[in-house]
Length: 376
Image (cartoon, rainbow, N blue to C red; front, side, top):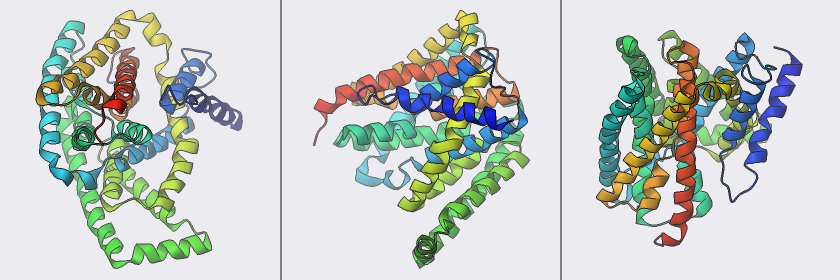
């Protein structure tokens, strides 16, 4: 990998903010980054080679950081507040049950044999997408309080289940890897909680700020990469390491200074590089050459929307049910793992991302509709 390729990647990644510039569209920045990768990858101009070892490794680092940020957006500390945990858990569970049924129907209809994967995808919600939309639109009221635990539970559960359904043949070893990373994350939470309560973290932050040491960022990256090394050693995705550490930080409370520093590292460089790599790996041409896979993507997106909208029966307003259907981290992770380990059919990773785009479009439309209906 050369500096010329790195410059091209950085320039291509700028397409994300350009497409997301119009606030009324509320498009995720990653859509432009994925599109840029598709246009410059093997199915487009062929200027970027996703098989380049350096490019692929940097993308893996970006993947871990992206999933860390996604985990840190899960409102762990608010799950039990306002008595809404029960209704959120109930809705997430019912959505999951419906997704199992629809996932089997889609898998049988398209003959892919990936019913479990489709069920997890359709049951998922994206806290990293939903929470910023709620904040941007200043949504308030009981429907929002009930939505938060639903999204958090679905997001966390589906991230944990994803490695198991992507490669069922290795389920036993995957479970051991998940337990190893999860156990380390639990111990890490206890240690960091102790440091937070003792005030040591705040004292270190003051010294770091005065001396410009960036101690929190250095320690956070060291922990993340250690968990990622453990994940790789136990044959699970770095996705699990990143998301687990993100949940730990969310449970303790992410310091604002660390959030700004991680934003610079992740959203400024490694995150965009990862999404450009993912787009270059999958390729827009896969869907164009295989219309059957385009239909699969549409079916998954419509199915995910339908199982979430069914929560109207449990009293959830249509606008918030549609917002809960938004997918981002889980389909991106599924496409990445499937592409890296060659577990999906040709064109199937692109179909998973198309499904995510469908749910995002629906979620944005529903969020706009929710604004005048919010209870203040």
